[in-house]
Amino acid sequence: MNELAQLVVKQLKKKNLTLATAESITGGGLAFEITSIAGSSEVFLGGVVSYSDQSKKKFLGITSALLKKETAVSERVAIEMAQAIRAEMKSDFAIATTGVAGPGKAYGQKAGTVWIAIASKKETISVALSLSGDREAVRNATIMSALATFARILSS
Image (cartoon, rainbow, N blue to C red):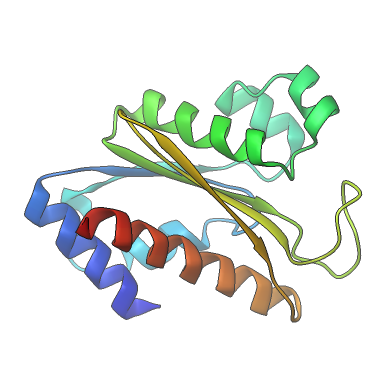
């Protein structure tokens, strides 16, 4: 993961761009990986760990209606999380993660169901993942996928 985080920080610096995060399933792990890179403070503005529905509403403005209709583990909520933190932090990009790490189900979704959203001023893309493994494996795979997807976006 460290190599992916290094690549992301390097690309952001090279392009003079900034990043923010809104994390649920990853519990701050994505921000941890990014900030483990020396010099990341030049490009990483900060993030929010919005683990509960209440914190998604309070800190990211996700509506109760959307959470009731779609649940926290949905493409729409991931997109809204990314767009909200990007706007709040005034960053060039934002990455959001939401899903079920397990064990067992949550929000009617099985463990390993994950949504990642990456927002910019131009567009927001979403990625659905269906992962397997224990809780730690699912969370780590989510972080790796988010970094890898973002690295591909930055290199294009």
